[in-house]
Length: 258
Length: 221
Image (tube, rainbow over all chains, first blue to last red; front, side, top):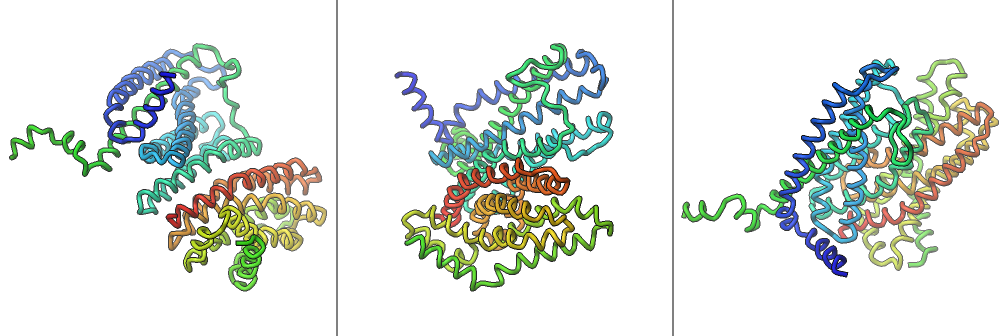
């Protein structure tokens, strides 16, 4: 019962941008430190110590960037859909700030996944670009991101913008699995995912352990980046309020200037 | 408001506003002609790409006609009155979408023999193509209406509408085009037909709710 009460309180507090700003400071540091550690260890382990692939040689190492980027790009879109639901049901301002923060980061990661895929595809498939099922579903993900981005740019009223982008994010999230599976059945040259939650990995541990570290690192990087963007956005939106003024211009300087 | 009254009103608006109904269809045939003129003269290539081109043109035509789905009623205030006074706004929205489908998707079903002929698809594929269009086009109208509802407030929402809804149309294109090409190759396209019907059902589940919510946002209700 006590736990339920605490959770309920936490939920209500989350609705306040000010409270979110005050609580999230340590999260940024935590995620940042973890991201540097995990990505650093993962990239050195993956690039220097993991054994070369018996077919692809060393070019498979692009996977250590490509797979985390693609995975996190999808997760970020889905979290945007969830934020959209939260905004729609509970009218939580922080949810809109989260959507605004997820967009640029998601676009960046999806582009990184497409670019690194092309670099990997050149030596492996013999082409920079192939209309392959999973490539197309990642490209569609990019278009879905850009669609919400363009919609947000087009709407001037902030409340309308928040609700409109939340709705589109939700509809997009429901459609993601349908789009993904339809294009994968349509045409796929891409190797199926080597690592899933339900089955044993098809590669040796020396190869997938660094990948796992990289994926975790990328999630931490996402947390760090998105929360930092959210904090900046909160400061910008609340710039007229007293607490932001007190934060930016500490009281002593105000007194000093008279 | 009574559903029958609503339906009759929408139907009359559709019939009397001939340009809004005919222009997309003319665009459709124009696009078919441009494809036929632009493609190499050997007949077999046209049949090979016919399915993909057919569905692509259906997608684009639908998108064009969606832009005007709510526009006129939004501009003259009818839409706001409708959303405020209807007992169930969802039903009013659904009626509008159904009438839009009758004017585009269903019209395409009726015109599919002509489309197949122009695109060089074999006569045996005509009946199945009509059935595929019947199963797949409701998904386009239902999902596209969400985008139309979101962009109705903008003076030039056309490009943004495309950016929002075309990615959602992709599965319909995938199954529609593969169905036509397997039908041309003599393989039964029933599997794709069921998939298209399934997608229309999913769209029916999401579309009207999301469209109603979208209209409320655009109208700032």
